[in-house]
Length: 258
Ligand SMILES: Cc1cc2nc3c(=O)[nH]c(=O)nc-3n(C[C@H](O)[C@H](O)[C@H](O)COP(=O)(O)OP(=O)(O)OC[C@H]3O[C@@H](n4cnc5c(N)ncnc54)[C@H](O)[C@@H]3O)c2cc1C
Image (cartoon, rainbow, N blue to C red; front, side, top):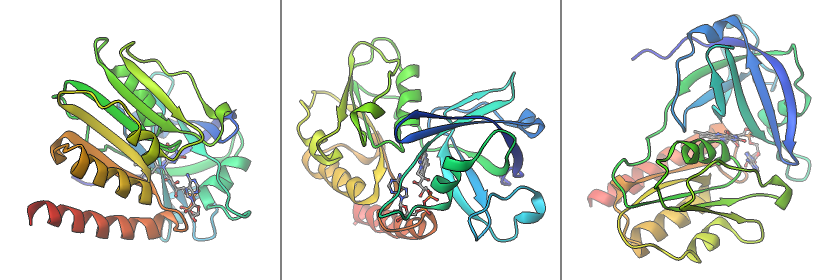
């Protein structure tokens, strides 16, 4: 299937919703053809190689793309929002995070997508979601669409206690906010339930690898019951991470069939 044509969107609102997260709302006529999406869907923000937002189709020769989950899309209002983690390591950040702190209503950017990640397995006795703040929009959307009798856990690591947000969820699904502990350590201390889990994990690359090994080797979760993905990698831009991720995934999938 051909990739959808990039769309130009305009910021209608930008708000720091918690200390580490900037929510950006986009509107624009070109969203009139944006399809309805499921949890886990994402768009790509397009920047030029200097880190400036691309604002027209003629800017799209050489672009750096940054991936963000569709937090909410309202087709009636033609309004789409994303939640962007603001990060900096010794003052060094990336084009998307830098842009999120200065972008204001009226500013435009080209977006690509939407893309859709592998959905949660539909056959399960309980659910397990795990992720860091980059995965929070997806996990929140999944939790709000689960059947009311679903049971399980969502383990979410946040930078600060003040980054914790209210999530609509079934009563039988417990949310564990990891603030002092790494995501793999928080998962390891879970009271594992019996029966078949449907697992959804997205986080930093090294954490993803540790969690994938734990799920496969210690918890014996079959590959088809899991969605597990790295959303970013410490010390690597998204373009570099994409290369590492493909290599890792190829090696991992080969090991499953060896
Ligand atoms: C399917 C998918 C959905 C995603 N959804 C979201 C989302 O909804 N919200 C969101 O915030 N992110 C999301 N991400 C992650 C986001 O695409 C990356 O964090 C991206 O690298 C940010 O781009 P940047 O320009 O800010 O930094 P880059 O230029 O890519 O990286 C520059 C430096 O910043 C570091 N870095 C990048 N991201 C982070 C981070 N989150 N925390 C700490 N350091 C970081 C890198 O290691 C690198 O050293 C998603 C990723 C995928 C694959």
